[in-house]
Length: 211
Ligand SMILES: N[C@@H](CCC(=O)N[C@@H](CS)C(=O)NCC(=O)O)C(=O)O
Image (cartoon, rainbow, N blue to C red):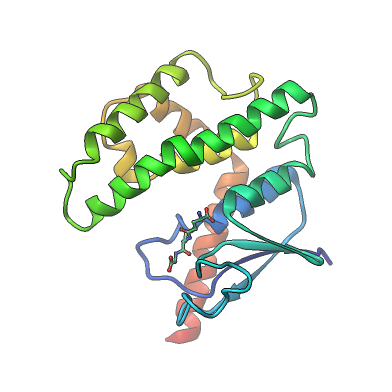
C-alpha cells in the first residue's frame, strides 16, 4: 500500500469540479506512475477543520509517511523529484523546470485567478482584464516558438502551466492560438484525462452518499 496520500475535500458544488487543485497532484502521479491514495477533509467547516495541515484552510495537501506538504506547487515539485518523467535529471533542465513552475504560479496564475474570480462575480470589465491579457499575450509569444516550456519535452512545468491556462474564461479571454493548441495538446494526455475523470467521479460519489 502506498504512503503517498493526496488530500482534497469530500465534496464540492458542481462549479469547481474538474478544477480543484488536487487534480494537479493526481495528474502528476499518473504521469509518473506513482501509486497514491486520495483522502478527504469535510467541505463543511473547511476553513478551520484542517488548519494544521493547510494553514489557509484550503486543499490540496499531501502526506507521504511523516511528511506533510501544502501548496499544490510544492507538492508538484516534491513529486517531480521522484520521477524524471516530470523533471529531467540534468541540472540546467531541472533549473528551467523550476523556473517555469514558479512562473506559472507567480507570473500567470497570480494575474489570472484574481481576474477570473472578479469575472465570476459578474464584473468582466474589472480593471484586471488588460493586465491579464498582456501577460497571456507575452506567454503566447513564448509558446509560438516551442511545443514545451523546457528541454523540448513534457515536464511538470507544462502540467502546471496548462492547468493554469485551461480555465474556460482564461481560454476565451483573447485569441491566442499557440496557447490554445498547447492547452489542448497537454489536456489530451492520458494522465490528465484519468486524473480529471477520477476527480469528477470522486465528487459524484459524494453526491450519491448525501442524497
Ligand atoms: N495556493 C494554493 C491554492 C489552493 C486553493 O485555492 N484551493 C482551493 C481549491 S482549488 C480551495 O481549497 N478552496 C476552498 C476555500 O478556499 O475555501 C495551492 O495551489 O495549493
